[in-house]
Length: 307
Image (cartoon, rainbow, N blue to C red; front, side, top):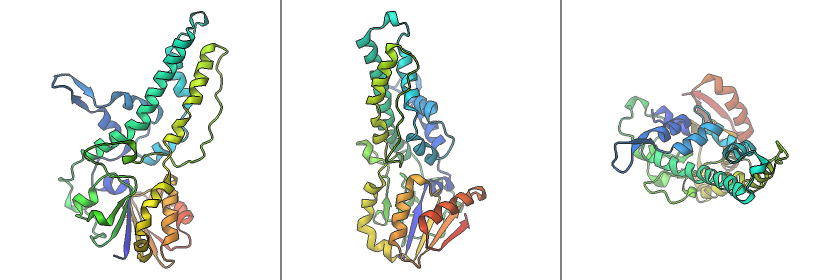
């Protein structure tokens, strides 16, 4: 075991698995039957509405996760809370209106914070690996390698028959039962989010209600923070194996800034003569990959190979 293989979502996409951010939204929109009735409903229309309204991206998970730290909380509170109450100052019912704004915003933020990891778990667990084309199998890895997977899927276990003892699922592994949001780690990497002050639109009392709600909802940025140092602690038992690696292969990972600390940790703990091979699909992404690799892996030799 002298190689470390790091895989990202591009690895699953390479195998034809529907694991893009768009595929996740499609999963939520898929019609299902409830209570044996003939009526069909989207799997989770409310979460889908929130994602499409505030986090609309086509493919990249990294875009979505980075957006969590720049979430426009004020617009969210105005649209999901303030717009539900009357703008007529003569018709203001302070306790009622404050409760309406808070209750609706709190419920929808809770759905984002807790519902996203839950639905990701259920979605990934529902994937089938039976029909993966043999031509898509990556021949450069074998069952003697050590793996760090940024994916929630069991592609390595089910397709490549890699022993779970050789795989670190740094952000969790989808399971049949979902217990809590810590089971699937998803979030942004900005520990010190600069949260602007609430900007009043009007002098109406309702706007003051919205400001109070805004202050109470700032926990969203903390609750969606993906603390890399907490997850890095899971690598500690494998540190001696990481230090022994002569090569590092990176397959299907964009080296996005949200995972920067993981790569810096690995770079710091591998031997100086260890070569790092970064595999890429699109030539248009190569310059960004090189810039990030230089930042993360210097002074190690980094080699880029088209996948």
